[in-house]
Image 1 (cartoon, rainbow, N blue to C red):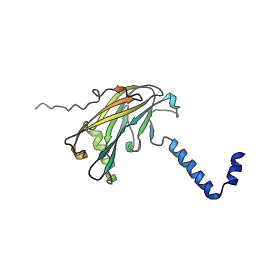
Image 2: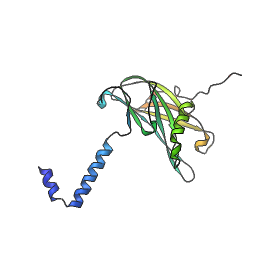
Image 3: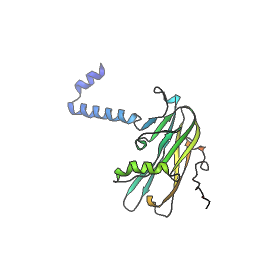
Image 4: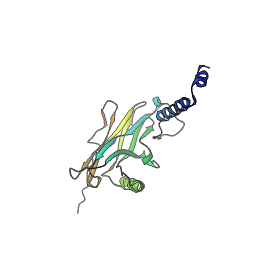
Amino acid sequence: MKIITMFKTLPLQKLAIFLSLTITLAACATDANVYKAYAGDERANLQVSRVDGDRYIRTDWINRYVDKVRFLAVDGISIENPEEFDSLQIAPGYHDLRVYYSWDLGSQRGLAPALVSFAASRENVSRTLRFNALASERYTVKANPVFNSQRLDITELLYVDFWIEDREGNEIVSREEGRYVPVVENN
């Protein structure tokens, strides 16, 4: 009843500002970019693990780019439109996560689907990481992009190493396990 009385005493402009701020805060509180990678009904956060892809800032002379670790598949099941999800929720237990390094294209957004397909097929910018997820834990997939020159231009990207850390910074999947190892062909 006090809330209704408060709305009656607020001028119309202040009421509109209050409602828009409330809606904005509610939208920020939701996990819109989290992919549910388990079967069944929605589960409480205590019953699932959350895995985030890390973000990286890359700059050139005039531009600033935000590159990200993205998810291609969980346990061999592909994620449709992986560029839409920054995180995923998984059931506790052992999982194989297929991740890739997604570079910011600036204004060239139309290339995104082609680059996802490219990254999925290249072992030097994608990897499958196996780990045991614990209930209510939060993990981050980290990446170390290695470039051919001092310039951090994406055309100079040689390969990416991946690993998984928990909230405290402990390596759950070590840098050694997620390191890129080129395949040497015998001629």
